[in-house]
Amino acid sequence: MENNRENFGSKIGAILAAAGSAVGLGNVWRFPIETGQNGGAAFIIIYVICIVLLGLPIMMSEFLIGRYTHSNTAGAYRILSNGSPWKWVGRLGVFTGWFILCYYNVVGGWTLHYTYLSATNAFAGVPASEFGGMFTDFAGNPWIPTAWFVVFLGIVHFVITRGVQAGIEKFSKIMMPTLFIITIVLTVCSLCLPGASEGVEFLLKPDWGKVTSTTILQAMGQAFFSLSLGMGCLCTYASYFDKSTPLAKTAVNVSVIDTFIAIMAGFIIFPSVFNIGMNPNEVGAGASLTFISLPNVFQQAFGDGSVLSVVFSSMFYFLLFVAALTSAISLHEVATAYVTEEFHLERKKGACVITLSLLALGILCSLSFGPLKDITLQQLAAWLTFGKVDVTGVSAMNIFDMFDSFSGMVLLPLGGMFIAIFAGWVLDKQLYKDELSNSGEIKTPYFKLLIFSLRFIAPVAIGLVFLDQFGVFSFLK
Image 1 (spheres, helix red, strand yellow):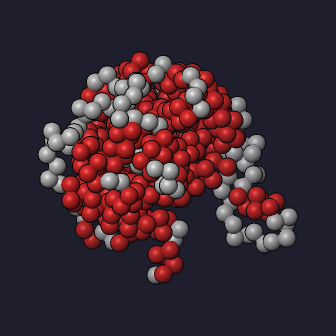
Image 2 (image 1 turned 90 degrees about the horizontal axis):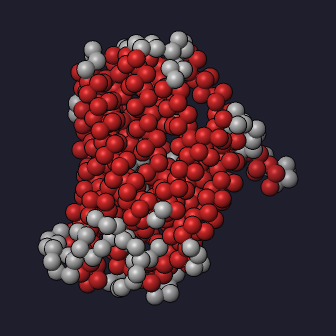
Image 3 (image 1 turned 120 degrees about the vertical axis):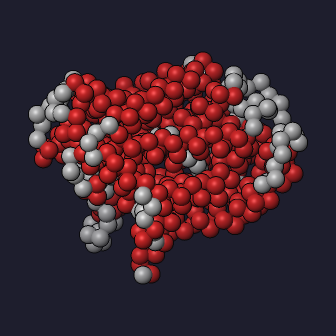
């Protein structure tokens, strides 16, 4: 199919942009903890197997669908579905990407604030017991986190309005190498700490005794979520690939980069944790790890208020900022490409529409830790039932957590499952093979295994992860 859409200007630009989409906060605040608590190297081996059998087939499918149609995600599935209900898979991907970005930008603002705190040595002299309160006070402030959120969103908007080559690709060529360099520098510094060998052993020593059915499900979930599958990013970026781009090789390169950053994050975190004699099982995960435990860990490991602690922590939070920013840009592009092409708007106008919608909902997410903290799922349930139904068993998650949970537990798994089924059962197999082989120029000896995975392995695996998130298997046990 031919068109006059803008493409990435180089293969390295395409790879770095796609890798930037995949590499995000989950690489730092989820993967290392899950690896350490689920058998170390044993978990990594299972994770890599899941990448090969689950992640790569879906990623290649998203790449293929995007490049073949040269359209936004919704348009791509509309073209290939021939008007059937499968067109809604693309629209679900667009909605998922936009929905995630409503709260993800808020976390991006947090990384900016903590980069600022680190650079100004604001952690010096803070007792270990007060870092939790420090974050709670910040998140609950009605102005400061919202201001950082607006700054973060503004940077994303600026890159998007500059277009594919001058914006996304140029930015990726600068920020992704920067991310790699910072990761390597931080890893070397952390490995030089006393007790670093214990941290490395905790992360990489295979402990098959910790491997259970839950471990396998967590590895499958991590493989799926870590690669940004099911949210339209890869399909949208692939629509800017030229016909000579090797799709399978690009998918492998993106997976390797994503896994490398995730493992290096563990080498940054755990040697520091063991250096101060802290139990790694007590550092938590997610925001509690990143914004509560690690500031304390870095201060104690590198000297409270020392130049080294300032430099190390500043670089670490800047690393988080870059990872969050590259992912946010890809998510914004999913929605921007949709509104500009489906509603025939100029890029700047389309980007403004998306940014304004993200601004409105992002402010609600930001304020959900402060002035809007009483607006919870439990409270909403009470309002909707006019107080006539007992809602004590309903979760008390706030607006931010509602966005996070619904996207992670419902939208992403469903999107990934539908993509696998569509690619494995609906999409024309000759078209699939022609695109994957670049019209016969590249050998595809793995094609039958790929289709088998898309038809049987990926949908079942994602379905199991989907059910596990709702506690189905715990209930059965």
